[in-house]
Length: 196
Image (tube, rainbow, N blue to C red):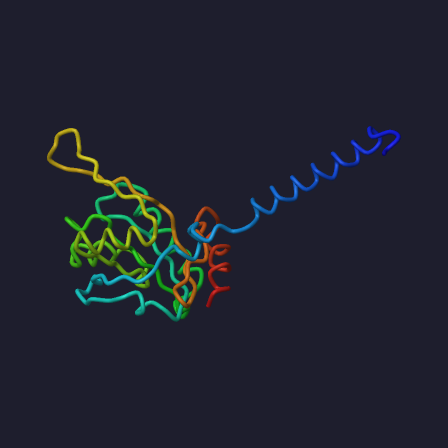
């Protein structure tokens, strides 16, 4: 029998608390197999290019790729982002093998011809893609894009709320990260060149 059991309570409680903390840490840092990973962003798609040709995601593998979802009637975010991408490509030089995809979230209005005309104001390495509503929803889901039609007050027109992230994919078509355009084009170009 112990002469003074209280002497052992403090060390025992420290050990028990340490084991509880260790178990909690293991639970937090163990990856959840069912949780989506960053690599789960993107994936296979079949869409129509601005020249009317049907293409799949495989057509864009082999070089780094920026992907942006928008629409041609967008008043500010889309043209600004496409201009900034054009400036990054310009800073890289015309010989760099890099592309960007402008995937419309408004297939009702953005036909291949509309995309071709719209993108003529930007770097020719930006490719416009469209699809029918089912194809559009599938690619939006693959990239986890939010897009919603918002009717205008007069009821005769609409705008689109949408995600405004620039996705960076590597040469194998795997998602790397969101690409930051909020910096000098030369700085953004240097980052993109790392994936050539």
